Length: 280
Image 1 (tube, rainbow, N blue to C red):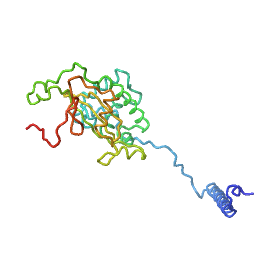
Image 2 (image 1 turned 90 degrees about the vertical axis):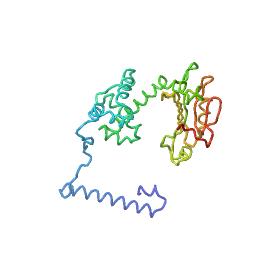
Image 3 (image 1 turned 180 degrees about the horizontal axis):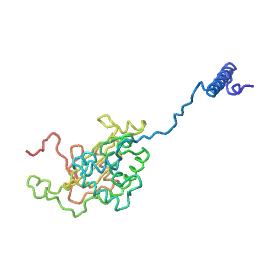
Image 4 (image 1 turned 180 degrees about the vertical axis):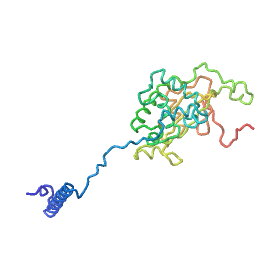
């Protein structure tokens, strides 16, 4: 009794599968005989071949950039060489990243900054720094976790006794804004999400994004960051959520400058629509 007669209800289909199966077995025996007789040769294509063959390593690439012109470091990592070294020392000093046998702390941080600064894929990073994709991904995630752990020390809200920045307090042009402690705005960051979530994350400009809100002081220091909102969310909705449940507070008597996408309140000062506020 044929095996396929139990798998297929139709006897015609079961006979056809039996014939095809017998033919496959027949041709397999033919190829074995031809190979044994030397008429065919078997080439093993599974032999490993070295992929990263560039003459200089990723570490040498980083050393060349850090020791070269300052503009090269800024163009690659979106920060000056001095800030790069300071950030590396901070991460290493706190034990958040460490050099390994095959990758230094400089290279780990460079991989992370090059990725987030230019939005390149894992394969591009692997070719640029001459490491496998798994190694790139592992160290990228390690640096990411370390950067996130620094946020509570460097992204903090101003205290209740904060004073107005001298640029605002001492400049007569900015006298009406004497109680402003910073500016607040939202920005859309492109993201890749599952197809089922794309309608919610598609912004009004047509691409999938995350609506991120940030408050910045007049010293260009981040005071608060709110992430995770889909691109279709309105700026005011993100701000309202940050104030109600996100821990965003404003000192009494102070306020932030916002654009026309937000509402005017005692804590946020928005311009009148249609008016020009540029100082000549």
